[in-house]
Image (cartoon, rainbow, N blue to C red; front, top):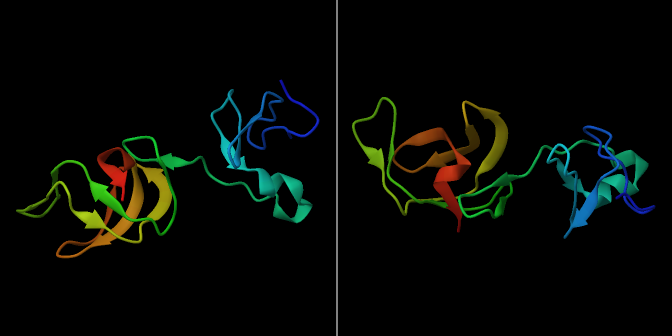
Length: 120
């Protein structure tokens, strides 16, 4: 139930929002956004749903992650090995399941799926 302090969901306008730590959550559409954005009228910018790693930790731009399994790289004869650390990731709109953009030494720029990484 919505109380007087919790705003409607900016995505689906549901009144069933609730706080979860620093975020507000809509159980109807699974949308999460910062409670700080709801307070100020000038900050009504919509934030995309949070991206979570293989263990459920929320990822942010600039985080470092570690690969949890070997990944084949299209167009390359070698693979990315489990345990490879990737620094300074960028979260992108999901495209074919890939929602992380990064640069990996020896491979260059590429996109990864968050289900194959853990927060470092």
